[in-house]
Length: 265
Length: 51
Image (cartoon, rainbow over all chains, first blue to last red; front, side, top):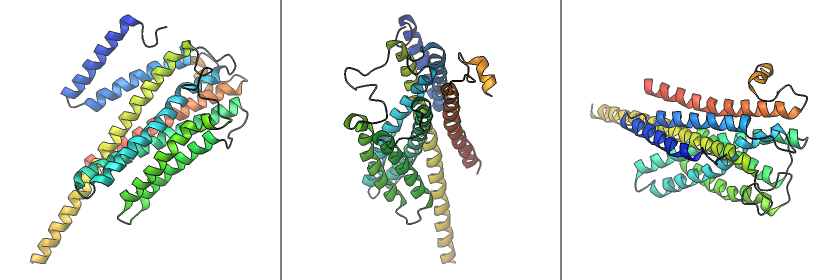
């Protein structure tokens, strides 16, 4: 099987995708068009993962968890940097360009929530796979522990955002983003630096790494699908946060206006 | 639910192999978390719009 579609189908898929996104752009429904495309890719990825990819010779069907565990893990390690870069923008702009800083902060919050979603899935599916493959739910090895730390950092991030009332909430959260960004390379390298219960790297792990070529289409389509889904979630959450910010600004402006009128009387 | 899934999946989730149940459970979990979160955000957006 070709890695994506058969070669003569690929231009057709590209054309259909472009038309769908252009229509979405034209009718101001880009997010809906993106969602439709994402769901189609996810459905195809599901079909490949469950019905087409062969069962693993040693693990059997439980290996199929790999097709969404690994894409979720990749997203859980990519989106913290989206959060980190947005947090840096917030810190850089908060005095010189408050409106830009607010937008960066909304983006950082969206990326943090989506990171937490993917990290939770990575941990949960890993735990279920571990019970089936190892016979135990959890092992305190370097990979699992460093990923749990990343999860805890983002839980802390969101708790700070939710409950802090110091007026420095965004700055405190941005500092947590820096800690998370430091943890990500440790999570990635943990199975290279130390001997762990977690399997050795599947990709970029040397000569013995990799999966059978017959499993690659299922992996790549799921990776693409969950990546697109993550981008969709960030866009959706960013839009919500911006609306809340605009609403809060509007309420604050009305309160100031009312105060000024009261003083004038 | 597992019986219903056994009709559409190419393997039986009721198999004595624990692994099949874990595979099905993990997929249900993934879909519940991802679509649950997206649904919650969409609901919040609608509420914010209507205020």
